[in-house]
Image 1 (cartoon, one colour):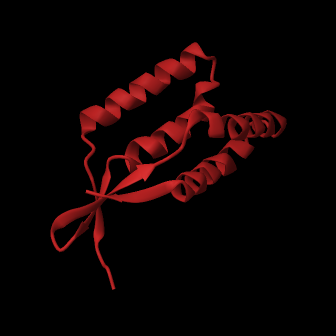
Image 2 (image 1 turned 90 degrees about the vertical axis):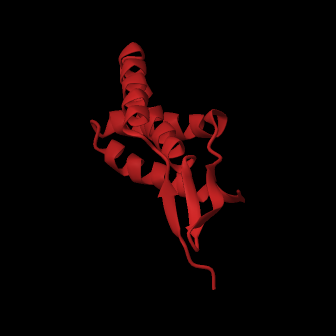
Length: 109
């Protein structure tokens, strides 16, 4: 049986830069960027994560979310959020997490 753990190579500077970028995008798009941000965040973190076994990296996680496949999902949840006065956005965040996990593969290092 294979056992291991995850190791993420994110620095605080990268996190702050990514957050600032998406804050600016959300302001410029009048909040619409906030619906794309959860995908970008999941992909950002997952794509910098490695599988470590016996003290060495044996694999890398790769999130294969693409804007084209997300667009219909974003539009649907945007409409639901508007109709529910923003309450659906909280469920949307969990749905994005599930979608990101479903589209993640492990590639050998």
